[in-house]
Length: 215
Image (cartoon, rainbow, N blue to C red; front, top):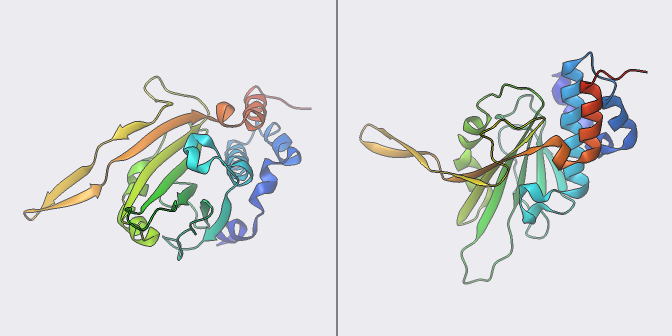
């Protein structure tokens, strides 16, 4: 309850400011606090600047909307991309969701874009993609478009040898139950970016913390 309440009232953009970034460098003895501050700083950068790493549609300041429960109540307007911030702890394997509904001409098919964001400094990773993509139908319905393009962006401390920094196509997955085929998740795109490449200010402070910096 306390963690959820904190997420409701916190001012995320301030975590991307200098005074909070400096605190990252002093967290060498507390991995939990370090991970929390890095996560919130990255989200603050998303809100303030957006990021081309999520796609050119999101390379601009984003409108922040916090939500309780599993899915937000309202889709983004057609004028500005949104970053949805769940207040629920350990929500569906992601730290935030970017969404936009670009304007189209009346004769064209409408298409939304939804991007799951997972930020981590840990070496091991949970099944975040599966957890998030398991809710694809609810997100598609909420966006209210003919089609929804899904993406998944990992923001990580270090890259593993097989992690691609460019978009990789993940094929649709289906299962057959009682003779009927069900879509587990549609095709989507995945990519990885290091925290240093995402934002060198956050990356430098994280590197300092990992080197054991102290006054």
